[in-house]
Image 1 (spheres, rainbow, N blue to C red):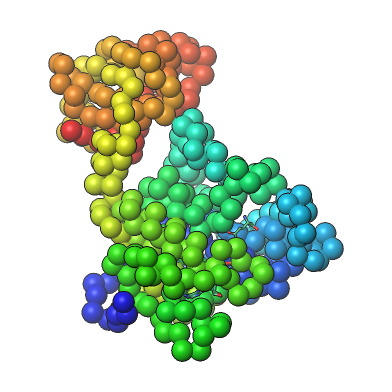
Image 2 (image 1 turned 180 degrees about the vertical axis):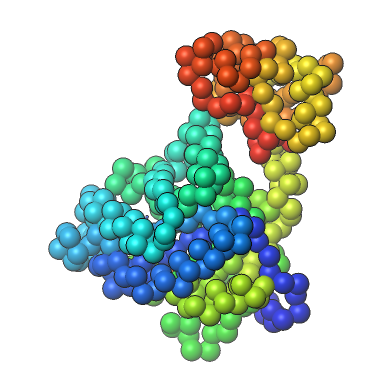
Length: 372
Ligand SMILES: Nc1ncnc2c1ncn2[C@@H]1O[C@H](COP(=O)(O)OP(=O)(O)O)[C@@H](O)[C@H]1O
Ligand SMILES: N[C@@H](CCC(=O)OP(=O)(O)O)C(=O)O
């Protein structure tokens, strides 16, 4: 299972979701501390200057808010939620001090990602923020999420954000430099595992709990997140996020910590998902111009090119796109069938006058569409 990182091609990434654990945000479990975040903040700034894009998933709200509510570890869910309400604010203020560009806060629950309409809203918001070069900072909406609405841990949340944000890489920044053969805090003989081609039950069995009472999930949730990411064509790095050397290695194309490779390309993962997991609920017939734009120009489908809407579907459901009776693409609709019937054939500028609002300028966004 162990391998040296030296024999591999340089490490590359273009869009990463970087997740930072509570242990780095508030190491003593009560106050935000900037010390461990400086190297990461510099790495993010430098990567953005090189044209890469980053979405940050930041834990630490509960730990950062603890001191305001007595300083003890939370004894109940409501205490934890109140701590998060205080700490989220502190944490964002801390991040704002580290960057000289705009940052944006996005607080999500599991339900928000599960539900089709809010899923598309999250996706569109992320797209807009990244287009304007704003750094999205995501956390679980701890003060509203009850158990059944919760992700519970930010490693798995970050894996889902990586899919929604169309990232190629998930970086889990923690207080240890990667996966070891056992928890090194308990076993001095533990040795690091540098590269994993395919995660197996054997790897999962190596992962134990967190040694501190600040982090949630320990190594197991990181491997679960990596497994989700790999299945969707996203590579995962587990690194020591407080160590400037990790980022230096990354900027030299080397792999610090543990790299868990993607199981397949992102394109084929997306194709499989759209083809096999989602059943099309309707059909959109399009004119020749729209068909050409989709097939030859890699464009999104605009309402103006739709000539007919068939079936009953809701926002975010899958639809087939056909030209002259032949299915040419499948994608997720930004509008319901009823809405599309009102705006088909209309220029995007006229969506508002027909519907009274504009959810999106396109009917099916290119990122949510595969060609047949
Ligand atoms: N096999 C393992 N390899 C490395 N760390 C492990 C392993 N098993 C358990 N751990 C624990 O996981 C911790 C990291 O997880 P956690 O404390 O939840 O961090 P974070 O707050 O960054 O999410 C490590 O500090 C270590 O105590
Ligand atoms: N949403 C919680 C973090 C939960 C969590 O997964 O924490 P961690 O294991 O430190 O990433 C918070 O902000 O405190």
